[in-house]
Image 1 (cartoon, one colour):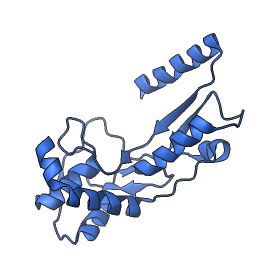
Image 2 (cartoon, one colour):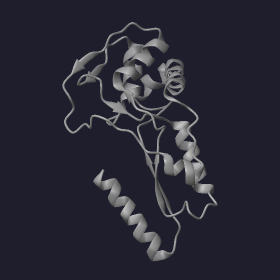
Image 3 (spheres, helix red, strand yellow):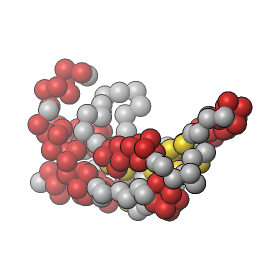
Image 4 (cartoon, one colour):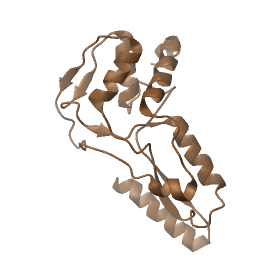
Length: 177
């Protein structure tokens, strides 16, 4: 969080020094097709999908009650386009939260994936991850009012699309890992 904020400060100084207009976008828990479940920084959703498709129980850290504002990648694309093309003078030189504006617990997210996959696979529960925050929820009101941002894909539909892509691309995923 500190490094991200430092980048925002650098951008602000650069904009003021060189007379540029900038827009900063803070993305919250982006997910969607083509995420790598085998990467060093793999996100929880592709890890859970991969586990379900391989019929290996995934591990939820803690009690699974931690919440995140999961944001489907198409919503982020919309925000990028709106930020790049805005003609609202009040929109520039600002930082915006880009998310859906809803909390979903890890257990809720896993249950949606399991239901969409037709799986009965129960997760296991492990220790809390050090440094993990309990709850995350973005205030997207400034992006809505100044950029006209309106997330179109909610968690269930995004998970359904992501699961479908992973299911259809298992060979591609195996080759990458």
